[in-house]
Image (cartoon, rainbow over all chains, first blue to last red):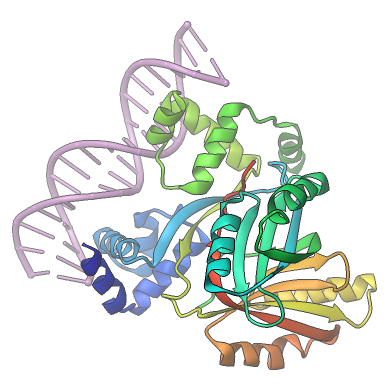
Amino acid sequence: MKTNNQNLRDTMNLDPTDIKLLKLLQEDATLSNKELAEKLYKSIAAVHERVKKLKKAGYIKKTVAILDRNKIGIGLISFSQVFLKNHTFEALNEFEREVSKFPEVMECYQMAGSYDFMLRIATKDMEAYHKFLRHKLAVLPQVNTVQTYFVLSETKSETAYHF
Amino acid sequence: MKTNNQNLRDTMNLDPTDIKLLKLLQEDATLSNKELAEKLYKSIAAVHERVKKLKKAGYIKKTVAILDRNKIGIGLISFSQVFLKNHTFEALNEFEREVSKFPEVMECYQMAGSYDFMLRIATKDMEAYHKFLRHKLAVLPQVNTVQTYFVLSETKSETAYHF
DNA sequence: TGTGAAAGGGTTATTAT
DNA sequence: ATAATAACCCTTTCACA
């Protein structure tokens, strides 16, 4: 099974129809096979088959609803640059594992350059961020320093890649 | 119409079922009303009605497919801190408007603190990033300096908020 | 791979409670 | 606000090109 999947992923080639399909679905995943078929000048069955393949091959990782974060009480986004005390394999791994468990951490990236990790953090407000920093992030034994920048306003927030 | 919508948005209160619904859909928007109804111990019609309301009221902004960016040839993510030459209302607005048009810019945030904007940029590779910087971003007349940090690896990437 | 048709299931509007 | 019904549309599969 594992081998099969891997083979599919590595060998699958996207034709122009697949690319259009992916572009449409990453903008609006509620499009029905019928609607997609019309836009692509293909039959419903053909579209259905392609979408199934693209999912199986891992091109489509998941389909999700994007919520209005302010309406659900997520009022503060911040970016934290985290410097670790040391850069052993174990320290990096352990930090990644632990920090990924925090629900406030939406994204975690290991960075090239002057700091080690960049986190995008979503909290209700400044007080919630403060608690997160004091009781969760700063408490991790691998962490040396944390530098946080707060978002004033969100101008663009896109999930669809241009390719 | 506009007034109606606005009223709906501002006055709608979420009960525990709405919250569970939103949480389920932001993890997996392919769940059918039937599946949601089973998980929430409600009727299909009730779930259908709630989802419709939550969309209309703007809680659910859109539903999208999340693609595997490496498979579609987006190999480089970078964060750019952008400092503007001046901070007039017009300069800020004009920068936001122009930078949002670039497909490489996935996210644009105005920041509190020492720099003005934070961009998350997605490109095929370093060469594509370089072209973007030289011919698009650095060319904007409002831009003073750009400091870019490159992502080595993505440890966590989540679209679902914890609320 | 793509097509068209058939069967089954899901979605949606309507009704009533 | 929820439940039940019915009509409709969509998804899914299959035989065939």
